Amino acid sequence: MVMIQGAPVADATRAGGRAVTDAPRPRDPGGAAPAGVGPVPETVEVPDPLIKIRTVDLFYGASQALKGISLDIPRCQVTAFIGPSGCGKSTLLRCLNRMNDLIEGVTIKGSIHIGDLDIYAPGVDPTALRKRVGMVFQKSNPFPKSIFENVAYGPRIHGMNNRKELADIVEKSLTRAGLWEEAKDRLDHSALELSGGQQQRLCIARALAVDPEVLLMDEPCSALDPVSTARIEELLFDLKKRYAIVIVTHNMQQAGRVSDYTAFLLEGNLVEFNATERMFTKPSLKKTEDYITGRFG
Ligand code: ADP
Image (tube, rainbow, N blue to C red; front, top):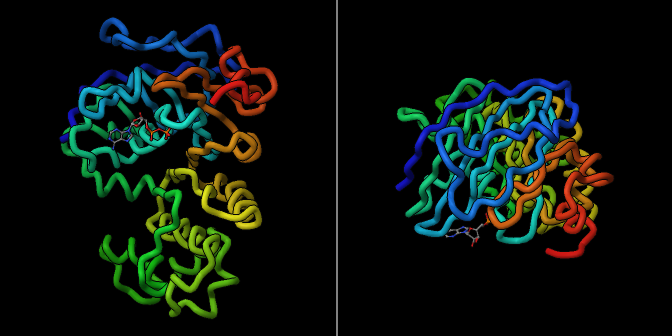
C-alpha cells in the first residue's frame, strides 16, 4: 500500500545551466525537515527540466530510505545517480515510474512531476505512466518469445494490432537500440538466442517501442562484458537526443563517461547534484570528493 502526501512544486529559477550552489531549494516547504535528514544539499539548476522531484521521503515500513530529496532532471540529457550500495539510488529511480507501488509497506511523501503531470496524484494510472517512463533493469529480462514479439509486446498491450505498423515500430525501436543490423534477419528467432549484451539492447528496444519520454536504467551494464558495456554507453549518446535518461550506476567511471548531470546520494540524502564535469573535477563538497576519489564506499 503506497501513501502519498502532496507538496507544491516550486518554480525552478533558470540559471542557464550555471551552478547555483548558494540557492538550494527548501527541504520541506510545508514545515521542518524530518528527523535524521542531513544538511540541505548542494544543487545545480538544470536548463530544461522535465522531471521535478520535491522533498521526497520514502519509507519501507518504518525504515526511511529517502530523506527529503529535491532534484530536477533535464530533458535530452543523461543524469546519473551515484553513491555507495544501499544509499537509495534504485529506490529513487523506482519512484519515477511508481515501481515502488508494487512493494508492500512503502510510504512516499512529497511530489514528483513529469512535465505537467503530478505522477502520484489520485487518478493517475501507473500503467499509463510507465508508458511515458520506460525502464531497463540490471539483468536483461527478455520474454521467452521471438525478437519481434518482445519489441511488439508493449504496443500490442496498448491496443495496436496492425502488422505493418507493428513491423515499423519494431524496426525503428531496434534501430534506435543499435540492434537492427544484428537482428533483422532473425526477427522470428527466440530472443533467448541473443547474447547478453544483445538481450540488454533488446530490452532497451522493448522500452522504446511504446514511445516513452524518459528511460530509466538501473545498473544496465553491471552484468555485461566490457565490449557490450561500451556498445550501450555509446548508444546513450544517441538516445539522449530524444529521451531524458536516468541511470543508476555503481561504476564511477561510467557515470563520468556517459552522464551530463550527477546526483550523489548517501544514506538516503541527496548530498550533491551537479554537472558531471564539475562533479568529477571540482566537486562542491569534500564528502563528494572523498567518495569520487574512492576514500569510502
Ligand atoms: P542502492 O540502489 O543505492 O543500492 P536501494 O535503493 O536498493 O539502494 O536501497 C536503499 C535502502 O532501502 C537500503 O537500506 C535497502 O536495504 C532498503 N530497501 C531497498 N529495497 C527494499 C525493500 N523492497 N524492502 C525493504 N527495504 C528495502
